[in-house]
Image (cartoon, rainbow, N blue to C red; front, top):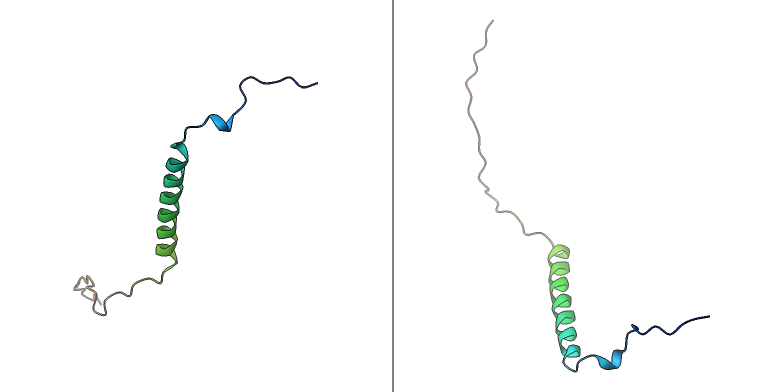
Length: 64
């Protein structure tokens, strides 16, 4: 019913240094994702009390 596939994965043939590389990549991604989550979940910083506001003075004349 089933045939043996010659292209199947053999995990024993992976290189010995591959595990360290995978661990490094996973650790890096966890650190980056953790920093991102910490950044978006932290309370926003308060704006300074006297923030500059642009105001345009316009003289209007009343026509009666």
